[in-house]
Every structure is written in structure tokens, then in C-alpha cells.
Length: 110
Image (cartoon, rainbow, N blue to C red; front, side):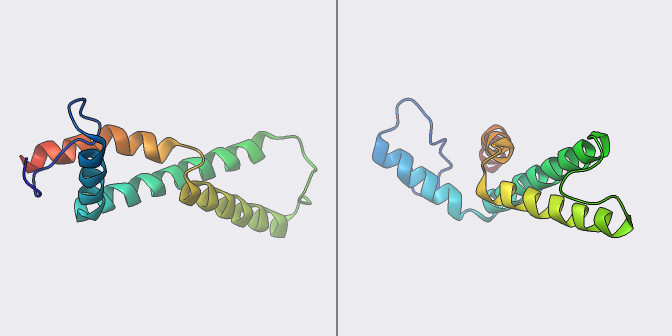
């Protein structure tokens, strides 16, 4: 296994040091960086869509008044929350998608 060989960091026969090195190499790969970015963006979009749908179906009242301006501020608030959730990874969707899709990038390289 050379330094440029793609390695799945979770291989059972891999030592802890080799797994850390494989993860480091994977994180430096532009294709993996692109996949990580795409999964975070998808998570942000998904969380934003959930929040918007929740507000559409929630009972009237609450934090925002019901007028045209408040709708715009509510959408901005939803987008900010969605972006914060996605960038922190606290929802977990981006990480799950990345774990599922990253091995396919490694297979393409072989």
C-alpha cells in the first residue's frame, strides 16, 4: 500500500496510524473535498426545506408577525439556521452521505 493508493480508513486490517494517514490523504484529495462540500450543501438545503415546511404548517403566531416583511425575515432566519446546522454537522446527514459516497470515489480511482 503506497502513499498514493486510495485506502478506506475503516478497513479491519488497518492499524490506527495507517487509518489516520489514510484519512489525512483522503481529506487532501480535491474530489473528496468537493464531495464533502456537496454533502454539506445538500444538508443545508434539506434542513432549510424542513424549516420552511414546518413554518408553513405551524400554528400562526410565535416569533414572527404575519405580514409580507415577516415572511422574508422568517425565510432569512430559516436559511441562517440551516447553514449553521450544515456547517456544524450537527444534523448528521452530510456525514452519513459522505460515508456512503466516499468509497465510490476511491473505487473510481483504482
